[in-house]
Length: 194
Ligand SMILES: Cc1cc2nc3c(=O)[nH]c(=O)nc-3n(C[C@H](O)[C@H](O)[C@H](O)COP(=O)(O)O)c2cc1C
Image (tube, rainbow, N blue to C red):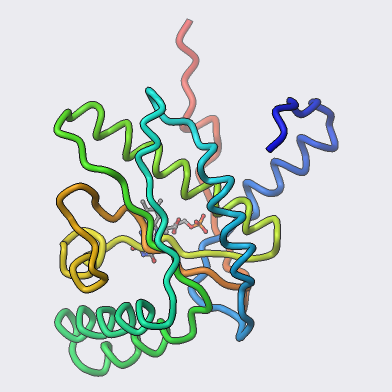
């Protein structure tokens, strides 16, 4: 990893701006495998996220075939429980079409402020992954919901929810289509305090 600082130029800034603003959360993926090396490369850059006191609070679980099977069954079970069997089938089918999965956890801290900071850092790490992958033409969906916010799925994967908790279940793949999104104007969310 180079320590050289990028030189600011208009072309570079435009490229970064495009990368940041064009990235979209994907719900549907093309039927195309994602190279494991690319995913590992994304994890490699995720580590460079800012993290207070260098706690490096994150862990990345790259799911293999058995863990993916478990994941799909958990998706099915949760959707069935919440919205019935038909929805369970639909959500499981959607999950079966996800080429690659990574589960990202954050260490637990007894200190409330440290926990907030570690969670923020882990979120930055996930976004590092998202941007790296997007540059390679690969998108993701960062999922939370009851799969992440209860211990049901962590237990099924064999993770110990004592020392860590799930921050994101990442569905990764090439886009089938490109969703559109909008944001409020920066002027509406910016206040200059003199
Ligand atoms: C912390 C976090 C949790 C999210 N959880 C979910 C989720 O459970 N399901 C989902 O469909 N999208 C989830 N998303 C993705 C957001 O819905 C998405 O970022 C938002 O709709 C804006 O779309 P964009 O990412 O394409 O700009 C999550 C995003 C974040 C940052």
